[in-house]
Length: 385
Ligand SMILES: Cc1cc2nc3c(=O)[nH]c(=O)nc-3n(C[C@H](O)[C@H](O)[C@H](O)COP(=O)(O)OP(=O)(O)OC[C@H]3O[C@@H](n4cnc5c(N)ncnc54)[C@H](O)[C@@H]3O)c2cc1C
Image (cartoon, rainbow, N blue to C red; front, top):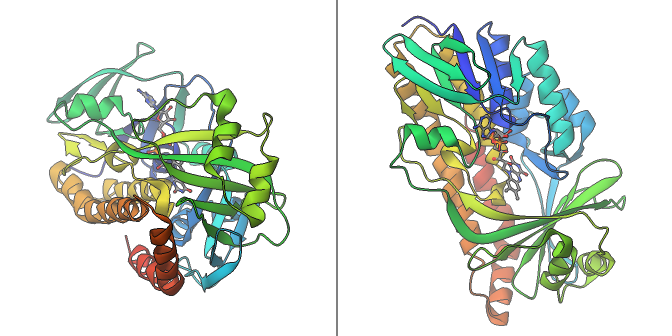
């Protein structure tokens, strides 16, 4: 089959929009179907490590993302009371002229990607989804929920962690897996001196993080073990987060004491998608969370979705038989995404079953190994995709 002429993308999140941009910039026609009637994303922040900054530069949106966020070049690890234990420079994967890590509000990222999608000529159809499809030797005949019928060469499921299309393509695939962990996030005013990516080892066994987000804001995150996947009443989440921050002193203790019913706390049960290779069947393929949702410990979920999009668009522009194109995609993406998933999971599990002695041992271990651990992770992430 010659280079792809038309792609139908299901899902207008990070992966779907960046695929739209990447295809559009290569002159490949595509349409993105987004089930939501209006754009809406959580009012929280997102971290963009160096490998995703590199990908954003290829997509032509790096400067806008940097301008909408805050950049840091250092990671710092602290004790329960906010005393600095170790600091390490983060690697500048995107090049010496680009900061190591950037963060920005998700709402800002979505707006930037959407504008770039439109500039690239990709069509986004809101309130629309896939009603059905038939895979043939010549591509996919798709039926859309708005009554249209459409031929495309490639159908892409970028429909997120619960991906309905994954379930259709792979009816025997394992369900989304609850990890046993939850993540709490709240956006706060940023003191000027919080200009690094900070981790705080709680004496209660949890780890809190502070991430600068904009000139005026930062966010706090906390990952906790939550056996049985309990429902967390949104109206009580500020109080539930306060409980889980018990015992922290220093800046994290101050933040805890300031939490109140007006604090916009978001809780997310952390789930994973462990989808065996290959992520394609016929002329349809999964990307992003639909294929490999991971725990957020490396801040690489959206990063992997964006890299998937870049690689798929590059291969779509090449004259390759369909199976060869998609198997090359797997060769370039499977191990990298699994490495992120496995490393993130191992990071989470290293915090299980804490006793006060284990907390101190773990703190001593990280004080010694923190720079080396991140250096190793970044070396892998810096590899060409
Ligand atoms: C607590 C937490 C913190 C995180 N922090 C980071 C971070 O700092 N950095 C990072 O890189 N990643 C982070 N992630 C991961 C990141 O959010 C995801 O990996 C990323 O959003 C995945 O992008 P996606 O496009 O695959 O899916 P999504 O962004 O979820 O997009 C899927 C889209 O598909 C749409 N959709 C669903 N079903 C249908 C359908 N049937 N038809 C049409 N459309 C449909 C949805 O409405 C949605 O718009 C974090 C995740 C969590 C849970």
